[in-house]
Image (cartoon, rainbow, N blue to C red; front, side, top):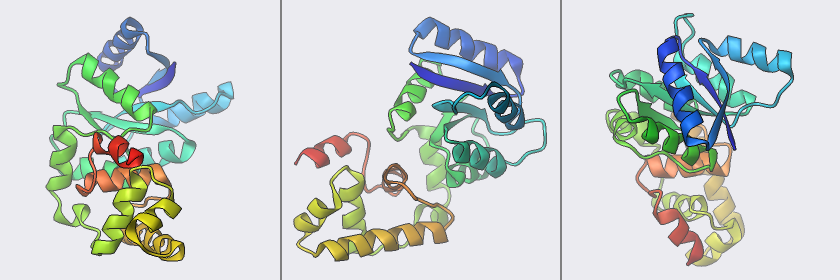
Length: 222
């Protein structure tokens, strides 16, 4: 079962999500609180592992920035979903750049929120209107200036193929494919969108329109 933490300074929102998780039965809320600091302190005190997914409000009442909150949670080992009214695209882009897996609007049905939690827990990217609007609203965010070859390597590698197979499919040396992935990672760091893991590269490929969630399986089985 997916272990979830809810961090929102509105108790009514947390209670609603808790009730939805309890009803669905696929996710267990092990923490509910109003700040990231409170959650991390709870985790250290209880000596429990990081949760699978943190559902995080975009702005909390303690004055911490979006980047600070997301960075601390991702660095602690959890995936992060932003749960917000999504009326501030710049803040949403800031959260995504800091490593959040995606955003779900507070106007969404509980079932949609739970589906997002399940998807992220399984390592799948989130594709929804709020997320897409935040990315498309910032040309610099959406463009890491990848070359055609770098885009080809990223598309196949992020879809699940081993790098050796990527090289074979593109007719290049393994060392060339590896160098391309290294350059891709460097370019994403330069635009504030680091991608240290293969899952991160998948997120970047989806963000930049190189892949969608439904193509990943077909690419990896060809």
